[in-house]
Each structure stands twice: as structure tokens, then as C-alpha cells.
Image 1 (tube, rainbow, N blue to C red):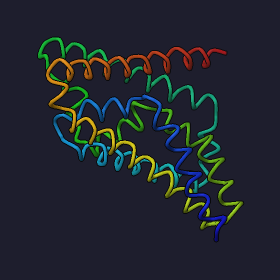
Image 2 (image 1 turned 45 degrees about the horizontal axis):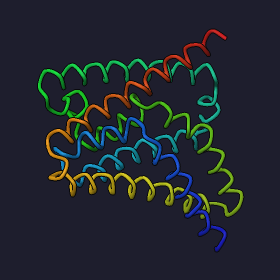
Image 3 (image 1 turned 90 degrees about the vertical axis):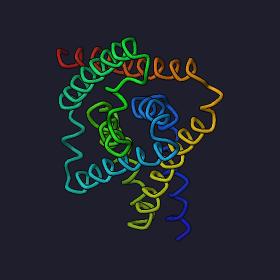
Image 4 (image 1 turned 30 degrees about the vertical axis):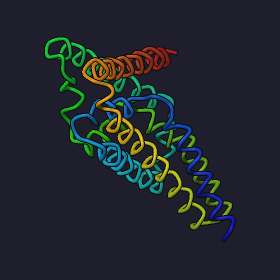
Length: 211
């Protein structure tokens, strides 16, 4: 039983190491929190976890092999990259016109945004599960069977919930300190993050299609 329980902190650390890296989902949570409050991160993480449950179901059905296909990965990244570039561009246009948080990013409810920014706007989530996630989950299963896999998944989900909830709570607590200019700076930062990831996905994996 101890071997199974030890899979919880392993799953937690692995997930947290990924969540701490700035990405589209974090950008969405930062941009959405001023309007939706401290619950934003928790709900967005919930949407993210719903996507991961779906991916776990696909892996259980044996589709992990298809997701590992390099050509399929390239297609996902190119589509995701184009979507991110378009979203970032629209965000900057709307921000310049209204001086408010861009509706193209914040129009989604937190739960739906969490799901979208874990799929369409962030294809690395799918690829992470197709590679690292699947491999580590199989290792947890080999070490402690079903209980080990369950504890590993629980640790993974707790890391997502804890981190994104903390981000929203921190932003809410510091909202009065940030002021209008601080909020605008956060919005611009979010747009830049989306644009950088979009260009990276598109350029790197479009090239892979022709290799």
C-alpha cells in the first residue's frame, strides 16, 4: 500500500513542474480572474481536469499509440499554433480599442476556458499525455497496480487545482494594489504569452511536416 501512496507525491510534483511553466491556460486564468474572482483558477483547473479525464479514457481505449504519431502531433501543433496567433492578435486589437481585458480571451466562462485552453489553444496538453503522461501512468501501474495509478492521477489533479487556485487568489488579493495600469500590463503579458506559444507551435511543427 505504501508503494501506491508514494505515487501521489510523484504525480503531484510532475504535474506541478508542468503547471508552473507559463502557458495559454495560465494566461487565461490571469486575464479572467479580475472579472470572475478567486474561483476562476479552480473552475479553469476543473475544465482542464475534465479534458484530462477524456484523454485518460482515450489512453485506456488504446489510442495512445495514435497520439504518439509524429505526423499527427505536427498537425495538432500547427492548428493549435494558428489558433493561438489569431487569438493573441484579436486580443491586442480589442485591448487597444477598449483598454479593457480582451473579450476574445475573457469571453469564455472559467470552466469552458479551462477546457479550451487545454485543447484547441494548447495542444501540448494532449501531447504531454500521449508521451510523458502515458509513460509515467504505466510506471505507476507497474509499481502498484490500479491503486498506484489512482494515487498518481489524484496527485496530478491536486497539483493543477492547487496551483491555478493559488494564482487566482493571489491576483484577487492584489487587485487593489495593481490598479488599472497593473491590470493592463497583465493583459498585455497574457497576449504576448499566447502569441509566443502560437508562433513556436506553428513554426517548429510546420517544419516537421516537411521533413
